[in-house]
Length: 425
Image 1 (cartoon, rainbow, N blue to C red):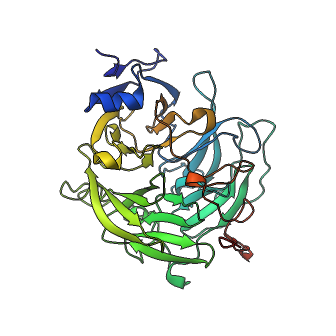
Image 2: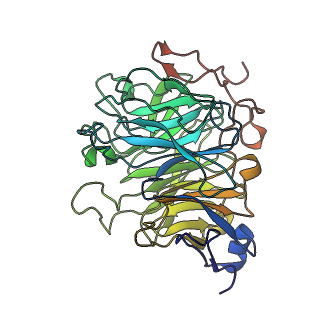
């Protein structure tokens, strides 16, 4: 076959395959190059690479080793916590060997989900909430940078939290209680992105409650924007069956949200073929509101879960058969082609739930989470900047000023931290 149609495994002893399927050959080749390259970074039945990919060029705990963070699906740890499911956050350290070393950073019944890097250098994480305490596991594979953790952690209500990559134990609450009511909790925040003005945008479908992992939802299935200057969160979009993935365009003037309503989440039937499997676009107004909602894409293979954007405005969607690559808005976001991850019995389920671009020397690398495998695809395209690691020059898209700094990270257990200075202050 032509090189742009299929690539063979870099690791021939592994059965994982990636297939490049063009729909608009010239435009797709501009993304991939004439000879696409990819490799399996890790592959194991217990890998559970599902959500929250964040690439840190400087790694964790000051290690200086480029690292990909990700979270698992909820799973039962067996005898450790027999009555509750947990989620593990893991760190894959980039290495020329196969497999790359993977360590468990944290395991908790608070059910971590989507994540992103903020412009203050902190990692922002969606926690779906939990009811039991489990012992914290601390970086067993990062020798020389291992933290000692004592005792147990308390239950954290659903919401957005953050931590500093140099100190993963520095978890701070970002979002206050929704609608200013202490008797309310978020449903199960799914994905999050931080705008360069410091506002935190996230989706809140009820998937965890539908799976009977957390209490019944008390709110609608909404998109939220949290403003750290006012310590208030407001609803910016409703009318979406299951708001899921979320990302800004490179200039932050457009917000994209995926609707995975086709997957009901624990209900019967588990899938509704007539429900949305859709990507919507919204204009972001000067007041920080959303307007002019429009349909961008309907997936032809599963639901579009994760969503990322490159510097040219092309969209990358994690779908049931792999990654769907859409052209920029000026070309109508048409499907350019697919980076398919076919299922292999006993090896990989197939498809891609979440994905992210690397940073620095890895800015042209697209990382795919395929449950039992983590795959890196080298592109000609470059990922649009998302956040900034601490110690680098602070600056948002197009050089926009960024409010706050690495030490200003929202709500701590002692209360609300110092607010970010307003622009011009």
